[in-house]
Length: 315
Image 1 (cartoon, one colour):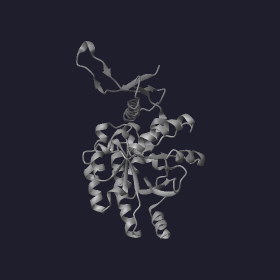
Image 2 (spheres, rainbow, N blue to C red):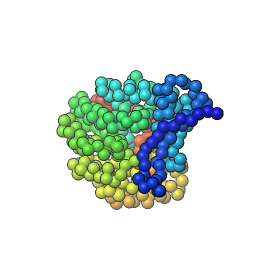
Image 3 (cartoon, rainbow, N blue to C red):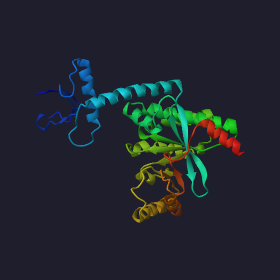
Image 4 (cartoon, one colour):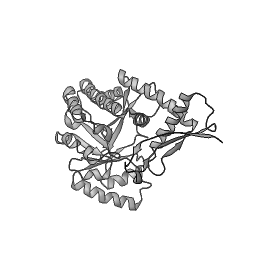
């Protein structure tokens, strides 16, 4: 019979002995079923990986059996996050820009900004997933913001024209004590008009108190967007970003969207719809008055020098 090792503990909910309930997270290693490794440090590493995985379980029994594939994934992510961190430190992590199209006139409203690397062959979204798992998200997003301001400054210098940028930022970064000061400092440093950078706050794991920090930014003239419908009730929300595609553009869904759009119109809230490339679906959105779309999966993704060339060629 295999032996079971376990590692825990998150703490006790109560100090009263009779009502004591343990809030446990368990990482379980079945030995020698999962592994025949003899090195104790390696075994403890395996357990730590299983424990961390158990902490991501939101409901039910919070335990996780170790799987060797989890160790392989952990090693890959450890190496990857080091590369990302080094590129942030050395400022060699680049930016890429996806068009946000105004369907009403088929023109570019602005550009959604993400990070990418010549050296790391992964999608831009995976950078954020890894960074979130490895406690590097705030550093990555602050890097994205700073480099976006530098890029906008460079565009102005080389083209004598402005473009609008849209930056998505997690609730974890928004809640940083120095966040607003950091943002205002960049506007001042690079002499960028407030209305040229839209901030889209991703509030799935945030709270209203976190989001309320954006009121100060909005009062200065900065456009504020959200990806969660309930935050459109706040008076300082300018855009609602529909990031999750519906299962279908059924009459029922379009009716719901129509009622929401009436509310948005009343309160002067714009709507940006993500990942809708079908022309018929775009037509239906436009008929409802939803004219801004962003198709990261299908639209052209540009580098900074390409945007500069496009602007100069059009003048």
